[in-house]
Image (cartoon, rainbow, N blue to C red):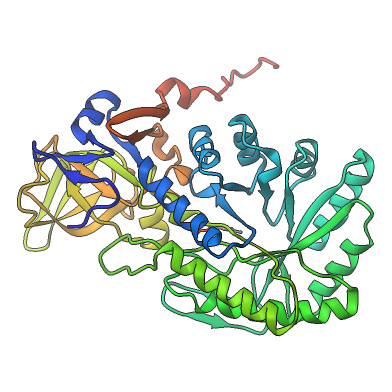
Length: 439
Ligand SMILES: *Cc1c(COP(=O)(O)O)cnc(C)c1O
């Protein structure tokens, strides 16, 4: 059993997070419940930022808010001096509602609508990461009409695809995102942006994957991009002020996972950028990174109540919880693995193998296969670790299950930051249908 951040076993033999007993949280807020260890999020944010400060470099660490976006989370990101990535009008609206400084918001996405781009212009956000030719012309048109200017990065697919344990290099990347670095697309895009009066080309961006445990992919991407920057200085007189190398830094979901410390990723990235800048005689560009999962993933724990159990003799024991793929779709979607403990009996031997089922009407709604817990009983509390990224943000109302509440814990205090959905919320948008009555 391993515990993250401030999680520990308290004197009562319960799981405690941020100095708050899990049983207290469940009594006050019910289950399922997402609990965030705020101190761990702050520590991660500081580690990413400090590595740049130590190197005395200009940088931005932008929280990829798609991992978990809420007003409170964005306010926490602001407290820690992070910048912010959004990928939709909804995420932008959340950021603006949270009072996040617009000039530190970056807008991503492969199909930003007219309305979303206009919203970005109206709020005068820091930059738009332009993904495709359609977006260049749309943005140019909207800038012209509204008399506004916008800084942009161009998203590049560098032909480096990083995975957990390795990376693949491809000449041409078959991806829905960005401009290909090798087939002439990116040069056309640069030309078009440089011709626009209202769009200012600040630099380039790439994002090579997620849950990456190695730095080789980032180094290779930097090398490939610098070789091109060298050509573009000649051909276009373009010098990239900003180099954004994306996110994807891995975290430890299970004991097999071996991520690097945030500082190690950043140090390697800095080293690669410095070396290549020197090689081609560039000033060191401002380096931007975009951690999502690695800021909030292992800071999140989901608390569930165990209900029914089923034994298939000689095969397996199942125990079902009061949530499932409605609050954590990653096991069903990606075969993602999680670890868990009995939150009310954490001090007891975890020596009975059981599989944790969700309550949704899908055989595939299994949260964890074959985990060791104390002999489970109805009413026991299960704590599933590392659910802070792509948990709440991918939560849904399948089977019309209300979405859980979210609580931040820090220094012995609990703060409710997202209310639990009610059944009234579930039918809130529904309208009656009566034949013969026109609306
Ligand atoms: C999703 C995404 C991120 C964050 O990825 P993580 O794996 O959560 O760190 C960063 N940048 C871009 C462009 C993304 O799409």
